[in-house]
Amino acid sequence: MRELEAGQRVPASGYAVETTGLTKRFGDRTAVDRVDLRVPAGTAFGYLGPNGAGKTTLIRMLLGLTRADAGSMRLLGYPVPAQRAAALLRVGAMAEEPRFLDHLTGRENLRINAAAREPEAAGQIEAALERVGLRERAGERVARYSTGMRQRLGVARCLLADPHLLILDEPTNGLDPAGVVEFRAMIATLVAEGRTVMLSSHLLDEVEKICDSAAIVDRGRVVAQGPVSELSAEGSRSVVAQVSDPGRALRVLTGHPAARSVSEDGQRVRVALGAVTGDQARLAAADINRRLVEHDVDVWRLDLPAATLEERFLQVTHKMQEEVAA
Amino acid sequence: MSTITINQAAGQARPRPGAVARRLAGAEFLKVRKRRGLVALTALLTVGAVVLAGGVLAILHAADPAKYGPAGGLGNLANAGFIVSSLGAVAAVLVGATMGAGDVQAGVFRDMVATGRSRLALFTARIPGGLALLWPLVTVAWATACTGSVLLAGSLSRPGVALMIEGGLWVLLAATVAYLMALGLASLAGSRSAIVGILLAWQFALTPLALGAAKLGVLREGLLTAGLDRMIPAGLLPGARPDPVSATMPIAVGVAVIAAWAVVPLVAGAWRTCTRDA
Picture 1 (cartoon, rainbow over the protein chains, first blue to last red):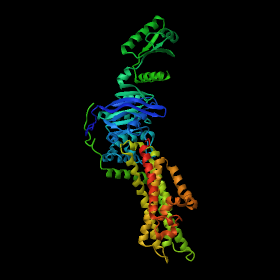
Picture 2: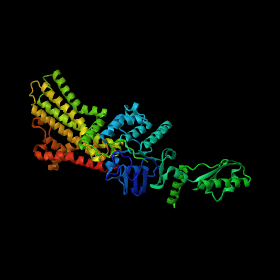
Picture 3: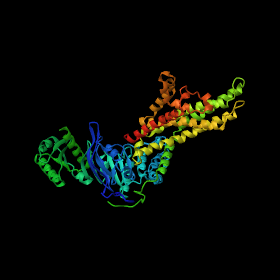
Picture 4: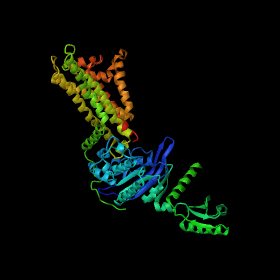
């Protein structure tokens, strides 16, 4: 029973990618450790983790480039590797930095890749080049391309499949700021067309701006997963106070019941609150202000920065490191 | 989340294997024919070598007919057969090793695998892809040699059409086996330069030594050169310099030896292509 009927972009399960207990070991090192991942179809999904966290290895397993040691996975509803060919028919993927045959032109490189796909793929070449802004330069040998142009050509290669699912590994590497903005817009358009985009990145800002949901991975394990807004909201908050006497402020606030840690930075004191709700953070900020004033410390400015994915990321990866150290 | 119908082809069965194989072979041919240096070298080692050898002989004959005989004739076609089979095999090794290891070394093999196409299909397409470059050049080289042997024969005996065809098939066989061997081994090793070096050293340094080592006895019949020499058309034997082992070899053994040298590396290369991390 096929899970993806003709013309349909969303599998019956509602997930474009599903993995259960997916594991990959290289000798004694576990690169991917029992990963359970659910990528909702029709969304932009961020797979976020520091360098060496196992992001690329997971993608390589999904694409059948390397075998999994344990666990199961489904792409667009098809079990992989059992029905790998059917699964990858509508998957466009860029694993690691895009590589090409340098002696061929950009267009010829796409022709090579299209030959391995359906006959219709060859007809997508010009549209794909147009979409990534490379049509004018497609007749040049790839050896002359900049890193950014190679990145664009890699995305064009993904589009040949008329993909229902795009898997992109660090896709903005080498793009200039304008290119990054264009890329974000392109991802938004692709998602609006009903496609799923799975974006692997170590750039938190990129994921926060592009993705609807994300998973944070560290040392091969998924340590947090969900909508980006929820992940960010779960992040630790802090209060930053600009004061007349930072030394005294540090002494006053050390030991504050809401504070996980207090640090001094020039005229500013930062109080890390840990994982708290917005209301709790506001109450803590008010109490910090009151205590400083009561101890004759002038408060020139008090900030309660919005929770970010970065803080959540650092929180969960830090926790993971502590667990490993213990 | 929504379900959008954009492409009715989605999820349909893939096209017939024959059509896919043709497209993949065409892609492989595109890869190799655009390597200008390799194409030039292959042309030089095949057509160029024949033209050069024939040209030198023609000039010598024109300069001093008493000392140097005509550049054509049966004997010189036999010499050309030796040149085309030897240098054609070198060209075949260069092309085969490039086809076998090119994708892996360039890092594009993973992108081909990620299309969902079977690895065996990707490997198999390399066979016609490279031969599409090699066969025409070897054929043109032999045709040039045949033409020269007739037009420049002078007083010498001219080769017959049957011998020309047999000789052509033989030089194509020699080039094809060398190509398949290099393709398979390069796919196995994932390295072009190493396989080129090993095969050329084997073919031009170690094999002659082994063929001359009487102590190896009947084992020498297992060498590719012995098998190929057994297949040399009788009319070309004088110039083709066959090794002493092949003369006494049963023809069936020659066929089996050639098949083994072509098939075993190919199977090994296919196995590695199907199992390696892309």
